[in-house]
Image 1 (cartoon, each protein chain N blue to C red):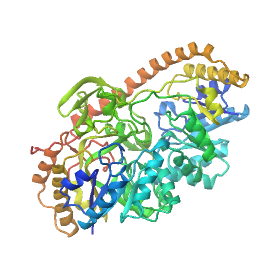
Image 2 (image 1 turned 30 degrees about the horizontal axis):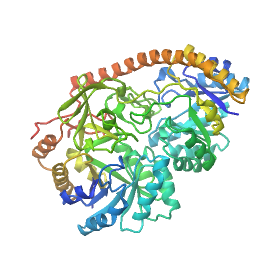
Image 3 (image 1 turned 90 degrees about the horizontal axis):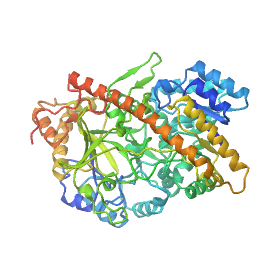
Image 4 (image 1 turned 135 degrees about the vertical axis):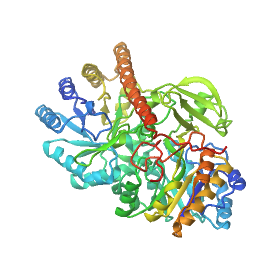
Length: 304
Length: 335
């Protein structure tokens, strides 16, 4: 049928969250190795976490750090070594060098190419498929038509984000720390626990910043188009929840699970007004459709 | 011997930099090179530039570093084959799938990775070398030691910008889609080529929205400062002997979107610097520093002018979208 997934950064978030609406969880924050308890940086926490997720009847994927410098590679290697014997269903990779490392470390698990893998073409999908990638997250600038083309012509599974802020920039330095007046030599006190916004009155521009990642201000929302996604035989859907509350993750998951279940059983989506109002209430800067309909990331296209 | 590769944002700029001692000139193809069309060349101009360079025993590298749509790849490959047949010696490419295709079709041409590849470590370089890259352009922030390590471990040709960013700020480009998020104009030309205004990756220009003043706030409180999201790189000088000793193969002068006169003067300057380094066992670069400072000033003026124009275009787009009612939708939110 279909798979609905989201992301979980740490053991604390995994314990506290309600992930009942999801079929699979991506463990780890791929943008910041210093984030407290980050699965992507803490080999000690992985065994318990994967057991917990599997016991919930869900698939469990491990996210690997997106922008490792030369200095980060040994630590990344330790995380991979710890994760290889564990029952993860796949690793998510954003960095081509890490693909190379995984192959040379004898990894036989399926690999997913993450959002910062810069995948734009079926030609590139064929390259990464040769390195063991079975699922790709097309670059957010791609339209639905382009993502489907890649799926059909590689062929390969594509992950389709259906809700949440769009990852736009990833950096190896922390923008919040740089501008919070903190001493860069002191231990991080995680000011990113609070919501940080970049705004500009002229043009009504807004972006959310989580320190090492900048996201769209508006939330991508594909609820009105779920039946079209199902009709296109897309099967892997994702709620981008980095930096969001437990309530957000639970509510968004519930709404999309219901819509996907209806769409995949051939039922009409029905009235979505209440759900859209609820989603809009969770989105501080409104809703958008990203680049799916061949336009700017901020545009919202309702149903015809 | 290190190759100095200079920008050719116009046909006139190409001629000037080759006359001033650049070993190669790199030129962008209209719609295919992460710049606005005013800084890209038509096919006729590219052909003439290749002829001019080859007649002087110099080289042309063609920049085709957009991240194309899958359906654009045949048109891209056809162009690359045409330029290679005209005598272009190499290509700058971002899409790794296209890199592998070009390497199979034209094994004799140089393939330079573009900054769009977003390299962060030596394993990236090994990967790209394995699929056919002959040169990798390394990010501004890598140290000389890291560059030497990469050269030793991979054997891939190393290209560095004569441009460095101070610490801080966001990675860009290769990991940034901020500009296209705020742009609304997109069209396909007669050949099916995507021209997404505001997306450098998809045939448009980066609108430099990172360079406007942003308010930065926590929750609903403003931190009280207007800031720019990305720090700007600057031309550099003092580390050049160390970079050459580390095995750098190619020095890339930036500036396709600067004036012909500024780029001509910069190329002339670095030609003198490189010749000075080649002619001395312990080169003293201090006499060159005042001239470099002058370039920094001239560069800043030209960059500011261009940034203001592009940000203004982004603002116009936003206003148009607001009038048309196509921007982010708020519904009647339940809070």
